[in-house]
Length: 328
Image (cartoon, rainbow, N blue to C red):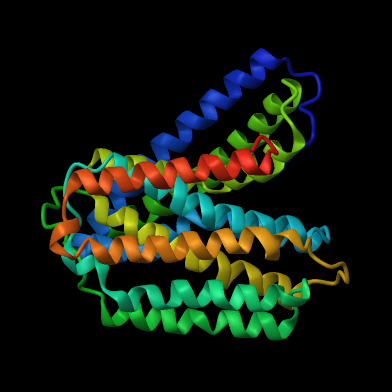
């Protein structure tokens, strides 16, 4: 992704960047529409659709990064991308969602049980990184979170609200095709944004730290961000919380096992991932779970408090980025 776009001017690169970003926004908007319709037809809440279907669709870039990393013996890049993506999903994307909220979240969408696989995935990733290598045992332990996650989804499948206003004339087959097409569009458009964004950053002399740790992490989270913005506009905020939880779980339980089962490299991972970045992931995840849980409590069921909390998440993310760039 860091390769120069040979023979293409900065102006043309900027045009490609804007077009790619536009396609991401369009496909995410349609993805949210189709997912909401599907939720209503299946009698499943929008929260659960966000937790599963949308989460999987928006985790596709991280999955492909993991596959490509194993093929190129660049496991450190894949693990860094997962950690960076999970931090940005909560601190940046969920933070923006809180700031943009115009309605209160459903009380039922904050059951503690749903956060067990999220917190467990972080704990097991810390354990896997203790020796700075991902082996088959680590992969097996982490992938065991998947059935726990699916059990929690099944037992809480009626959490949140269901879309009962299905006025679409699309058949179920066309709806499924639409979801698949929007997922593909999201993936390739997001990749286009990352490639052109990296090129623009490189040509403008932005540091390699910002390019690698910030742009790639945000780039792989771009589908989540686009889906979040679309959900805010359509006032489908249950989708946002479900998407963040599901995407962060699937990022770990689908990508890390790919590395553990198929890696052929004996190189150790960068120790800073364990000593610094996993500490940040742990803190952000716990604060996120606590923040959502407290929204059930009367003093915290206030839009101003939620918006202020979102501001703190986003502010904290930018402090983290400035720290990575050695500005702080």
